[in-house]
Amino acid sequence: MGKTTAEKIFASHLVDEPFAGTKVLKLDVVMCHEITTPIAIADLMARGKDRVFSASNIKAVVDHVTPSKDTKTATQAKILRDWARRHNIKDFFDIGANGVCHALFPEKGFIRPGYTVIMGDSHTCTHGAFGAFAAGVGTTDLEVGILKGVCAFREPKTIRFNLNGTLPKGVYAKDAILHVIGLIGVNGATDRVMEFRGPVVDAMTMESRMTLCNMAIEAGGTSGICMPDMVTVDFLWPFIKDEYASKEAALAAFKEWCSDDDAVYDQVLNIDLSNLEPTITFGYKPDQVKPVSEIAGEAVDQVYIGSCTNGRLEDLRIAAQILKGKKIAPNVRGILSPATPHIYQEAMKEGLIDIFMDAGFCVTNPTCGACLGMSNGVLADGEVCASTTNRNFMGRMGKGGMVHLMSPATSAATAIEGKIADPRKYL
Ligand SMILES: CC(C)[C@H](C(=O)O)[C@@H](O)C(=O)O
Ligand code: SF4
Image 1 (tube, rainbow, N blue to C red):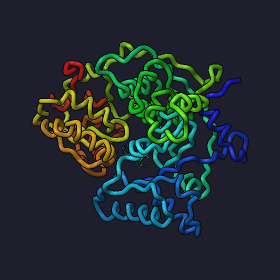
Image 2 (tube, rainbow, N blue to C red):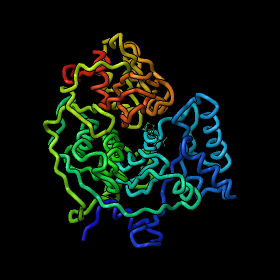
Image 3 (spheres, protein in one colour):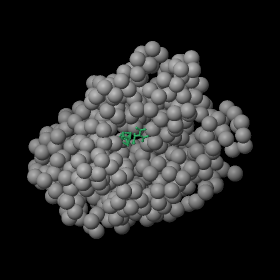
Image 4 (cartoon, rainbow, N blue to C red):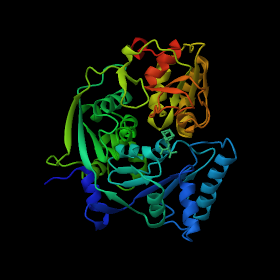
């Protein structure tokens, strides 16, 4: 019987099965940020176990609130910073080099097909775009991961999503994943791996695949997963060129991780996206989605472009294409947070930052900040934000604030009109 990618990764990383169905896996990468890791560090210290399993397999970043905004966030950053120094974690990213974890770590080439990856962050599923098993974990699992380099999982079944057809103009990975979550609901993939397949995914860049996998958790998914292919090889090539004789050799090795043709799935869903419209959330749950045409005209106070979902260069290019030569509406505050310093610099070189600033956007340093309502764009009570982020929970971007999730294109069109707008008329 064939295996899925997730089953192959579980089989190859298994170190123990203490109870039937509970599998202890060897970890390839443990990622850390300043919100959840300090709690794990404090506990390890209290137990006299201030050690790390490997200084090189641990990656750490101060990203959620940076530069720190108050004593509390400064202390969180300091705990992580001191810990990283104490343990010689060389891949530690701080002010000047820091960016949103799920954009920064892939950009550095840390994730490879077949890897096991954990982090104390729910959007760790993003990294499955490389054909890895990547899961967000709680503090206890993070502590064990840091100390021993292993993590216990109940092996998830896989749901295969065949994304068929081609995405129409003005419709992107974000619209596709919002549509999928709308179809299956916020619990539709609970304890399941969401395997994204089909011609729509094959045609996607790694950035788009990361957008897709990023929101797996919003449907309850443990990890998103895409099949590694030449797009994956091309993205990783600068980091792996000394390991493989050629791109074809790398591809052959990566393909070993692809699900077998006769793999058994929990469910297989065939979804044709050829007629998909730009899609947007209207409520406080990510599965409350509508075509933008049904909600167009609703006023917004702020437009936010950024985050681990849609703060990458591709996203900035799409939004800038729409904003070029235009001004955002006077009733709207536009905020752009490029997800990493590299993205910021590339966007500057390409003239994208000028386009955003000329349109009236404020450009912040790379950080999560506004996405989770902590800094750089917190909403006031009753305000509405059009956002490229991944969570629209009540008050997510500020107490009493409402968030509509959408693509960078829809956000840019919305900024121009000051109310929710269909991006297709600007393309
Ligand atoms: C702060 C962190 C624990 C949190 C998460 O796990 O997702 C954050 O990144 C978020 O998006 O709300
Ligand atoms: S950008 Fe938002 S969703 Fe992503 S890790 Fe940061 S806070 Fe979480």
